[in-house]
Image (tube, rainbow, N blue to C red; front, side, top):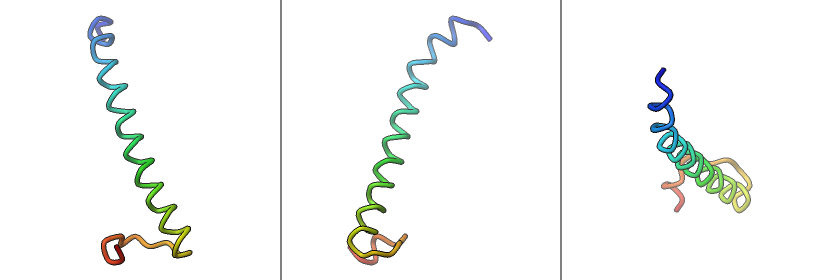
Length: 49
């Protein structure tokens, strides 16, 4: 693989990874908050809220 291409793509891949990780963290936080309040795992958020 061309090293210049790798250096050019790296910032975009890094930003994509951080963004995806942030979205996963928000989803996990939502499930954690629902579990903390209702004390059971509920995968149907729209049915309650």
